[in-house]
Image (tube, rainbow, N blue to C red; front, side, top):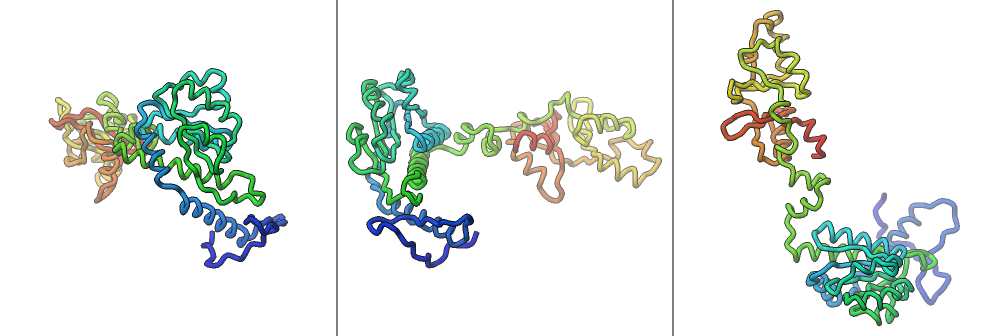
Length: 350
């Protein structure tokens, strides 16, 4: 997409009393129209940033930080989707949180609320009937109620313990009806507060990873080599005195593309790969039938400890001078306890 123009063509508004996003009665969208819409949305978001009461926001953030219970969020329609998303973000950061459907709450789910909890109600107008009906029930449970709204002097703000006003100039919608700007500022507000809480709680990278074990970041910080390696009995091993041609089945059947050459106590002597086999066959011809694995193996292979992080194994495989597809896993006495492969790391999501 092209960059925003330095000067955006002036919009013509049918109602001179209020700014209105222009309606283009055409079946296609040209570049200028689209860029104008993005510029308008940018202006409306800037209005929010320039007029947000930071003291009010700080009080809200500290209230969530100091909560000894669960921070619940609720909302209806698009505001409900935003409330649910913000709650999920907090949960991922280790903050006890949940989404409370205002309708389901009045049919039993209010039972989860306690006097230690905070209930945050998202509503653009602050006059949402479902939320207003929820307020007295939540108060009866002793919860601390906070409304987050964009209309001044609304009903919800008057009945809650605290109100946070999110300044809204207008919706991007040409009719000023579809909640596309109001939900954007709700999301920005909630996610920014979430990151402030993350910092205040001194959440570490490792703690964040523990909350995202299925994600790549989580796996890279949680998984150790021992979690992703093939165990000793699954590893392709042979003795250095074994003939190369006698070990072809072992070389190809374990899915590692290599042999780990060991002594009788499983100490690692070296490695022999399918690449080594091709090179030996090309160089030796029929003499390969008399060669032992020990004569042709690499006696200085890269290895890794079972307690090393799995992501470290991947970095070691990719390190110069040339990448490898596997690493023998050895203990402090250089005894083979398994093998980790690039395919295994990728399959684990790293």
